[in-house]
Length: 386
Image 1 (cartoon, rainbow, N blue to C red):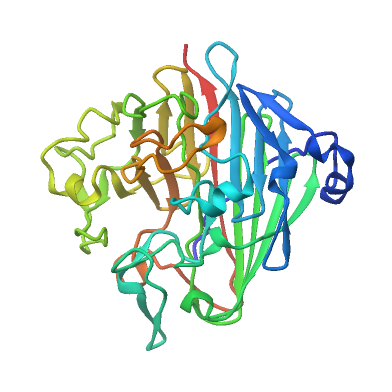
Image 2: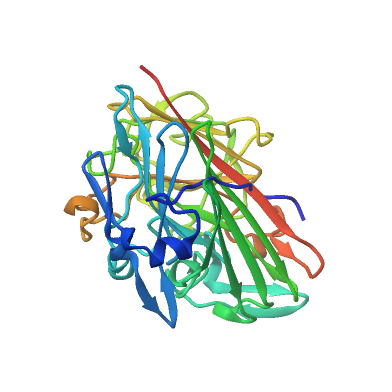
């Protein structure tokens, strides 16, 4: 099976090397204040299904800061410098674990699995046997089903001052997927201002796997308004058209001459309201781009915040990139600082295999067999354009 992703680097504050030390310390009630964002570690301590949740804070030598929670394996905040040197939180999240639990949007910042994106009607066959996952995006399965990895408490381990390791045993037939799947995700912040993710998994039965992270970005800063002015470039000559339920039609089409042509820098809003059936099906951009030939050293997408000058380059070993323009945001949730998640105020760039691959034999396989190791890496590198 082809390799998929890589790893990240993080730091826990205040001055804690081990998670146990942080949790037992009186410092756990301290807060990290940057760009008007306040995150309290104590607000992320909760017992869910007999397991304890925590907040992990990580920092690189340049002052870039990221926070994570092991509830859903989520990135909570990501502070990077803008063109004026101001640290800006470019990821949507909540100020407490309860915010994520009660959110009407289940995937903010979450590690996604066992299968990212959609499977038609939740059904697929392996070795001649049909399996049925839960239907949570009628009439299909989305992002692993009703209780996907966004809903579980991962085991967290602080490896060093820059690295967080999350592990989870996804049991045989959980959400209808066969095989006991041992999953490990390593998140880190590098000193090159990269948010890095490495995904690994092994199984004891034939299964399907498609892991990713669902960070919701706004490069002008969380709560700064619409993302339609962001400039986007994607190294993809083709994309996958979908039906009205966002399941692939089974073909790959050229982006040339369509609103999906981001081979040259184009703002998200420039063509998002064009009279195009695919845009109507997705209510905007919610499509998988078939990436041109690449390796982990070549950026496959670039996004620039029009107000902040923050530039994000995406690198991956995956064959696809799901670009989502925040079409289903409905201002139903109060994020950090109480700011609502208004329509199209964030976007996602999910590195992954293609949607519905188990039912589309012409797509790259997502099957994982006993004795194989699923391993893939992706990273998001930040800089500024002045």
